[in-house]
Image 1 (cartoon, rainbow, N blue to C red):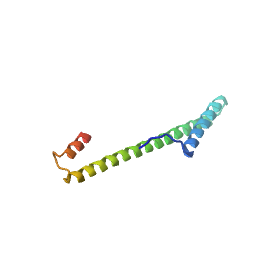
Image 2: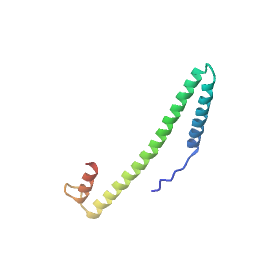
Image 3: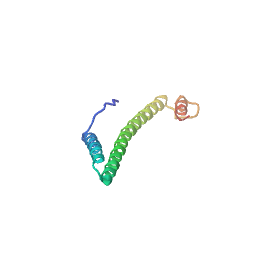
Image 4: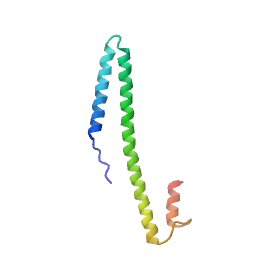
Length: 101
């Protein structure tokens, strides 16, 4: 499994939106009576941060699921090779207990 970092179009769009929002917020801070605009841009920036974090977590969860499925495949192959179900005291059970404790 490779964990190469690659930016897709959505990543680029989020990055650009974040930069533009930050710049507009900085400019709006210089404009007298731009209070609501500054607040809206601040909220927009926070939403972009949350969306980015959700995308990152999704990728991390996908990686975790792939690792878990790989581990389960190894356990399944081991159980088949040993021709024995997973029982207390078996090497496979010991490995599982090590994971959950």
